[in-house]
Image 1 (cartoon, helix red, strand yellow):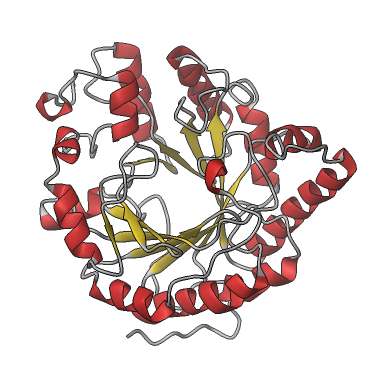
Image 2 (cartoon, one colour):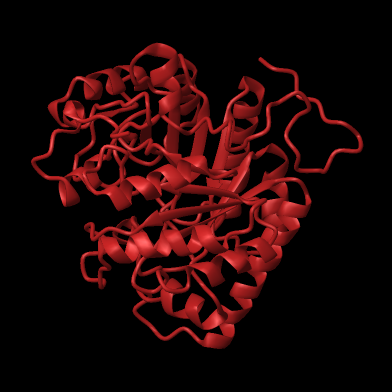
Length: 384
């Protein structure tokens, strides 16, 4: 167990003194780390679904179909701690929902105990939240948290209203959502000033691809230290939304690189462009991203070094977006055992590629299936 200490002059939400800062050179969520250390993918990251409640209904939400109006009982925390104790190489713990902070009971009885457990064990933590509720609940969490991860796909309150409440099934007043939008920005600013790493994620989609620089500017003004950017694919939760082309994705990324704030960590994920591409322009973009300061591409943890545990059923899922059923349950299985079984599965083996020259783990299952069906990435290498 690590001793937690903070300087008296440190910001209230700064990590313990002596802990290595999260940065482009230190991203413990990236599965490339376990490959480099152990020579194969190991389970280093656990994501916990702590709620199915949410005060929003975003049109692009990956878990929108699972959101509920009432909460089922959580499985015993003793079982969760036991399973986490058994994960030999655990480096990161993430909490997601729904909106994890929706219920104060969840904040006090589930999240804070998990965060304190992680701090005592030296594990880095992330909370996926919309930060639209009262600041006091985030203030309770922030002293024990490493990353506050928020979604931000807006240039104004009207965008927030259209995107964030598209699936409510009822009329939500713009006046109400505008106040939530303002509170989200204020909360992000306060948390960032307090020393917490606030990471704002934007999707490149039909609403944002031609506004991405304006979105980035607002994220910088909010005080976020990181801007995380992912293309949005037409998966099960977004099949009815308009799609954009790979060329439009490409142009949006180039525009963002041309207009980004140089001091902000720009983290790209699930990009469809690779150093082994036969397209010279795509290789040029990959090379530019790799060479620019404060810009990284995170290899996707999905199906590589992470599992998700449903804290109501105990079911364990090995990917977020691919259509793969539960691979086990914490009532019966150790997480390392579940991951070892998945590691040998033919679906995982099909995308189990690693190019050391490019520090690349290739496409995840979703990108492979949607854009590279029939292509064997295990036989490809970076093209100089």
